[in-house]
Length: 255
Image (tube, rainbow, N blue to C red; front, side):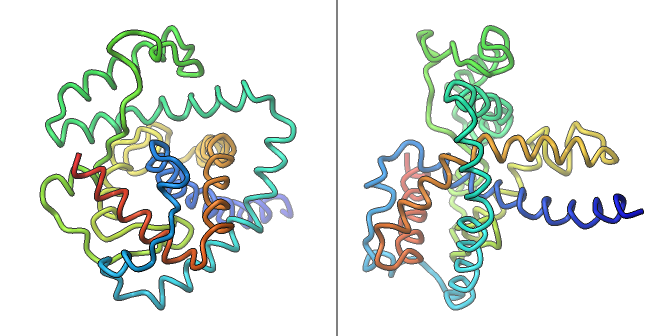
């Protein structure tokens, strides 16, 4: 009975923490094509054109997220990086990136980017076979299949002319806006490992939790590194992240 109660207590807590990984991963992926200086350059004045009517609530949520990231998640990340060889870290990260192919494919197709859809499909096929389920990335060295910038449903919505809406800081998930929140729901709907169309049976919550936990451990070092860079250099981290996130998303949509 004690073991059963422990499971029902731990599962929701772990589930909430792992849910937060989803948004942090998005932020990391979006920033991966920028230098740290580009993404975290603090220009508070330019953030004034970001519609932020919920700033008071957003700032409280930002502080909550900051506590979770640095006090709860960072010790896990430190332990993982201390005991895991770099090649294994890269392989695990590559594996989960490869699994997100449907999200990138949908982002390209919804914007009519047929060449991008072709490249993503080719990379997925090559890395899933020659790369041993995506652990390795042999497609990187094949002409015509080099990595391209990641696309998602939120970018497609922006390309369709849908406005950003108010800026949001989501509990655990981090920076977003109303349009990107809708995009996140769309991303999950085409991700075979996420609800509502997950390929994992609904009853097998332990398998789902284990997979999400593995993804969390694999992707979190890069995510937290970027977040700590923001914290260490910004006078007002909230405004810096708001500006960096918004400007990057605008740039990605404009391309």
